[in-house]
Length: 483
Image (cartoon, rainbow, N blue to C red; front, side):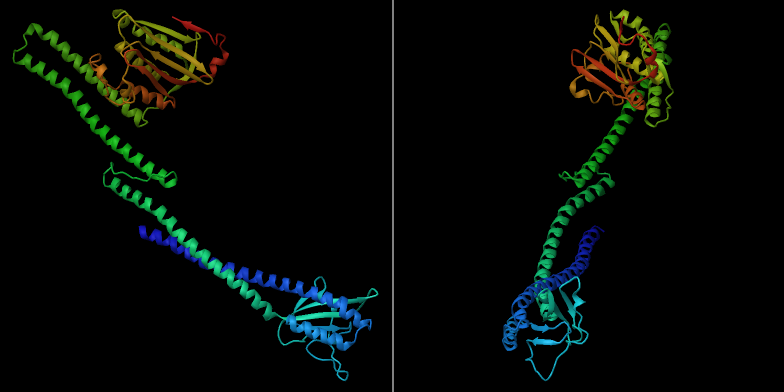
């Protein structure tokens, strides 16, 4: 099949070359023949005009003898390979370079009509049945005292012109054949140049179909084939990463479910076999309850992520005040912040700032981001939540002064179950799904979220929302509310 494509290209070009050669050769032949006829006719007409202005005019003015003109015409005719006539207006032959004049035998061109060359100075054919084969005839009038006294007519056999055209055509045909051969060689080289990377791409695609997603497709070109190879490689990398993520996901889910279940089973078995005394039951039952709540939270997070990824959640878009949502979320962390001497500072654009989004989902985004900021902030520091407006976009930022995120981990924090080494000791009860849920919710809105973080300094998460037209009716635009 691969060879078929290669040979189809060559066969198509050969067929194109053959039919193209025939078409071009036919066109060139016709154009060359017409060119030779016009060029020869122009040359012969110049000779006929000179004869008309000299010998013929002198003959009609009786300044030279008929014999002298006859001899001159015979010499010119032999030199040019033509037949020269001088006719009077009625068609009577006065001079014929191929035949000496005979006083007893008058030659007349029957049906002669000087208008045969009307609009032109030459004609082709048998010239009023005077020849057995086709000739080119040019006609130049002989004028004296503003009257036409006769005509000088020069005949040249058409096969002479055709031989001249054929010699020119032979050169053209040779050039055309050489051009076709050279273009075929170039086509073969170019086709191989294109086909070689195509073979590599096909081989890579076959390997990907067999499951070898790490097979390289080394096509380093900046054209469509290079783009195709890069796209296939990107696809293979994406599939490989997806498979790796799936394996990691299963391993993480298994681990996150197995650990609390093992702990719960251990506590319950210890209670049953008497290892844990009855007076400690209340403490360990609360531990078991906490583990069940963690499993419930983990399960709910997985269901939320699955619905977001599969498009199973429909957004209930409404216009609402994002500043009010921020105040509500910040208030829910008041007790936690007080216990750790943290402060939440609000820099809000105006008293009211309306956005168009799903209220419940954006509230979940803010809760997750503030929850992370509280978890990873150092004591006696400040968490800042800020809203700004630029054109039709609202920017919401959550900034903390916590442990920060290492640069190598910043692209990985959006993955499910991912936790940085710095966060593992800070968040033992976390599921590692919060930021994944945040990103999927923002993506579902068609918006963006980004992170700016410096290890040991803190992190800033900023996401965008669509501005609502209700803001146009507010009077406090451009003012900040600080609390």
